[in-house]
Image 1 (tube, one colour):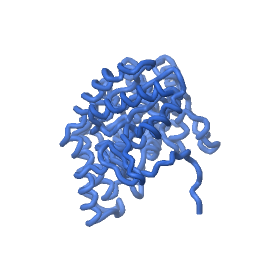
Image 2 (cartoon, helix red, strand yellow; image 1 turned 120 degrees about the horizontal axis):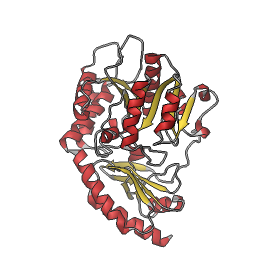
Image 3 (cartoon, helix red, strand yellow; image 1 turned 120 degrees about the vertical axis):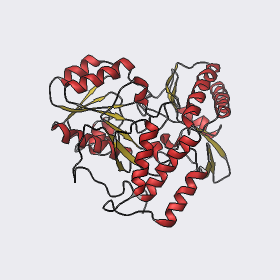
Image 4 (cartoon, helix red, strand yellow; image 1 turned 90 degrees about the vertical axis):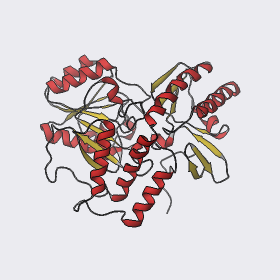
Length: 377
């Protein structure tokens, strides 16, 4: 049997990784400034994390959600404390797409409506409703397109209000900071007006923090930069540091009932151990402080590079935009300079999503390599 060919692959085979360094099968070391789509939050093979998972695996890796699992309770309590959302409730699943799928379903159960408002250049996942609210027709199959979705531009609240006033919108789903779309984000004024409009029209406000959450923006959640509250928050990538974990944080306005939501693998003992370890390390190492310090350093250091159009994003969820397609530049950084960066729908943008443990010296390495690469190209 062969693999179904869905990804263009670089000829690089990682075999080991430590913190922000990836080592391939030839012994070549790479600086990881992409974290595998922002997944690695506390660094590759972080010792406390590895020990926690090994210990849990020695005891119990998985059993059904029909029994008591104190690790789920511990994870929920720690997540509430670190995020400042202790009055929310937690539903655990296994991925960001699954989180958004359940967020949309819960919203529709809550108010009995079905149309969704999403935003241009959004990305919310590849499952049925999640991909329907993703602004990329290439990955939306006809079976997904049955969902009624209205896409609107960011930061034009009057257009949103006009749609919500029609009375059939169940939810507005929006990323704290857009990831795949290219690091665009709503203004504080827009987010605050959006929250008010959703309350006025009985519409559920879903904040997709799958990539922008878990301290990556400099606050625990990116929407917290804007002084608002969300009805449902979806999380995943950084939550497990590579172990598949996802969740939705559910505000007190929702009432649980048996059978409303469900999952087989979500909230397993092993995934909870991963989630707890991540939160413990974020707190122990004060990684949000590091995010903000490295962000400020990055903004100053990147000024040394000529030809940059703008730097987008916040914290360690950044986009460096040029006035040309960066595909050749990104390839050169990986193959010749041994630095991983990411791409976006915006072909002129390099995405920078390092582990939250990244150091200022790593930024120096990147800026030096970027200047050299631009000169060589």
